[in-house]
Image (tube, rainbow, N blue to C red; front, side, top):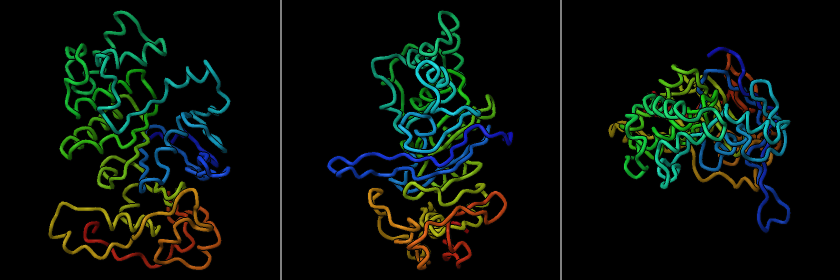
Length: 332
């Protein structure tokens, strides 16, 4: 990592109207301050509905931002309109969860990879064909397969094709939204290695969205933990896994499965019970207090600020010094 900030979000909010809700809105992202350094992989974890994917799309300016700012390489994206925004979009791309639904079955994979190059007028003719071949080689595929349709490839190969399409326009930043969750474990490792190789080769920066804590530990430089639209903990990966400070992070790590049956049998009672409240009716105060084993009166009334608990380790919790949950044998 260079230490240079590539993306900076301040007070970022995204709200969606509720059909038949009488004007009520769901706050999917609720006032997030976040910096992403050039060359790093920042992972975002949390349960379904925590706002992870919406955060990723807000950083790419593909969903309307209700409040706050997103600056990309110092440029406020909200100030870009029309052609200026389209030119800027070349610099960020997305890799989606479903490698089957992400590719148009009517297009050859070569045409799919060519699409961003054509849209942004970056190559044509022989240069376009050469770039398609180069991208296929970068993801470990033979350029000779460029004329084939997506149905001729396995799930892992299709995800490689989606990654080739994402890097074709030479972006600075890629959002990978659950990009390995549809693959089996052996393929997950290969795709994670590919992400890392591409990062080293061409200097990519990633926002890696996942619910899988094992995957995150393998690829991330830092981890942001989200709950009901808020970042509740942000830390370097080793620090977060070694000493999680927020009760929600502690519960997520304690609940993570392990392939070792002996350790599974020693699993303590899950510390995190029930489902999170609806984002349309988020609790007052700390949004986690309704499920927190340490909740005090201040947690029920006052939102906790994000404070620094250790070098580069930030947590939004009134009780960050409270006794930690019993460590799971899976994380020791």
